[in-house]
Length: 454
Figure 1 (spheres, rainbow, N blue to C red):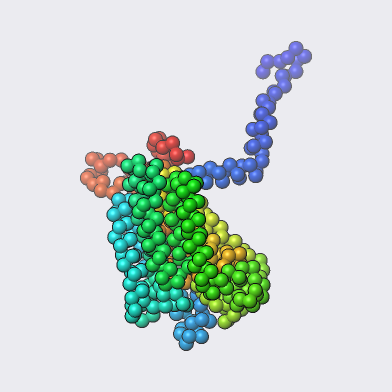
Figure 2: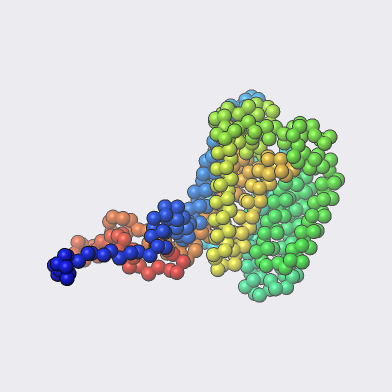
């Protein structure tokens, strides 16, 4: 070792790292943020959020339906698991529809748009035929299928409007017609108003609000100018105001917003107030599954429209925030799918489905919290009701299919091969057979990736 002038060995000096690099590396919060951001930007994030979030909502909904419906079933001299078994059957059928929709190509979805719309209109008109349609809770919007099974055609009308409207706007965009206001409104708005009229004939104001939200979502995605958007919104608001003013029942529901007493502002606010009581008595972690007090007759529709209140009472603030987080993740994933695609049909359909589920969840939860009037709509994927669950699960299958169809997602899924063994169909002798291709990190790195994958 060479010596210095003083005869001592030279001092080994370390190279100092820049302060900024050392700060980033030594800051665990910054590292966690960067890792989370990297994971959030991966191609399959939307796919996993839609699939995982929807399945968690459905499973938790089944648990809460079983807990919230036992007392109601016993009061009707039925087995305690009666409503749960019906919901489980609907979820099983819906799982098949979800899988089918997630595997169907986009062309087949577009081909189903017109037959589905025609079928929905026919069934919604059939509801008004005496002897076929039946009334539930004052609304004439059900068809009896025999026994205890019923169907609500207006729920399938939401899915039909999404598919048909997305196909219509996509074809008009391909022909450069959406720059003219008449092509943007006709025939989308008249057909939507026809569906709204059929729904309002049965008195179902809540479903009409959801259908209106879907219409506005499609117009917004199509790039409707502000004056046109405001004009349609003003007409719809005026019609809604007239319908509310002419109905004492709807006026009573409007008067119960923010009520704290069972009889407030001269209206019977029993359901709204007891929903607040259920949420207030839950605390942070709730009273435990099955330990709700309000479901013992005080809270009407505990397993349908007000199942969120029972969730808050039994699972507490932690349970309700978990449900809200799952719906927020589902909404974000739908917006991401609609924003990253180049296919206009996929953009309109994904945006329509996201608007539908998000608006319905906001209206249901807002009514339970006393912030909105009680509209009588179920919490999607969560409340009891097969007629609402089946089309919603098919719509979730649509989002899954669209999330898988992204170019970066397709490339990521194509790289996933069996970790061990040869490719399927590789026959022949050991000498002529191709060598096994191992799914190693080196082989993954050698594959050209698209610009959207990290």
